[in-house]
Length: 229
Image 1 (cartoon, one colour):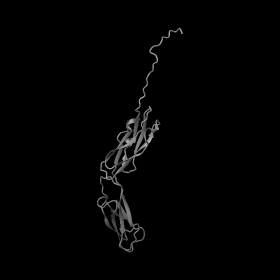
Image 2 (cartoon, helix red, strand yellow):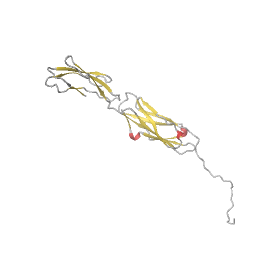
Image 3 (cartoon, helix red, strand yellow):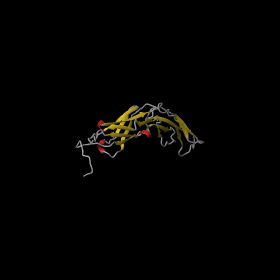
Image 4 (spheres, helix red, strand yellow):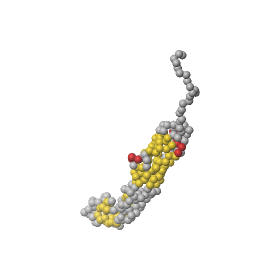
């Protein structure tokens, strides 16, 4: 990153030296950026020309929050007034992770009591902090509304791998058609990408009741209709 300093107003009748130094905050010196100290000299001939300093940031393969360090200006010259002596520079992480449902359709029966829906979290780098994903019901079939609890489940990953959200099912004694509800995967974490093709999953709830249909015959024989009335 380049940090530039300009003379906002006034003129230089002699050389003016301004010191620029870096200060760590959440971004650490020599880990996230290279510390820098520089003297910027403004002379009569270049008073209108910005003086710039290059500060190198360091790349890594860790998932991190946005980090910050400061740049400070100072001068021992009493004729120099420093305006905005402190500026902050934020370092955005360019590492990301991918999240997705392991299956786009899960089939369960009412008497299983629980439908488990699993999510994978993958990346090319290890997690340096927790990642939270939300599994939320987005819509349902209009058959038997009470066949499941419509809740939001949050999954917090401390490492890469698979976690499962569980949705309770309510069994009943009625014979019903197949029911379903749809779950959506989302996150507020800007460094996590939810794979679009696997961001939704359909949970199909099948009825475990069986309808037995048969014929009932009241007589073992009948008289042939001879047409005589």
